[in-house]
Length: 189
Image (cartoon, rainbow, N blue to C red; front, top):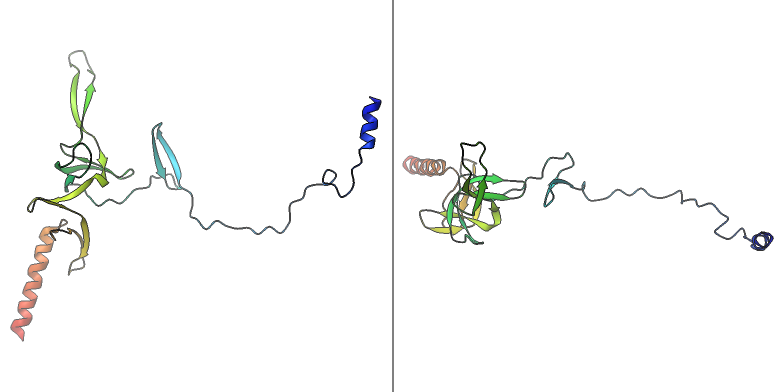
């Protein structure tokens, strides 16, 4: 014990050494706010599926080039080349369900003793980037464009064919009205 005390007394700590002083952080640290927006929260749906959420815990909804009821052609995957109509849209993960495309087999258990179990084919969702809008009249797939009509309404159209997808009746009415106004101007002058 005496040897231990003598070793401590032999150990001299100077006032300039670090061990004898208190740690004090510098007082004039500038408070810097991050230039980035609020970080997105990730909600846990299932172990294999993550859904990005906004700070208010609502899911982030992605914009898609297709809408419910559009006729589309599958451009990649094992159903490549098939044509169908969109029956459902899932916006939080940019997936669509196309009629008679991407059929999966589901084994359904019987709910009661009288009702037998069965094997059902269901349409599974595919990513919206794997489909392209399709023109039935000209039988061609095309990318989508946006343009504003004369009456100020914004519509979608197929770039290859020029065919209006949204409200074709309104587009035809607008063309007829434009034709009538040009005829009226020509008749007046």
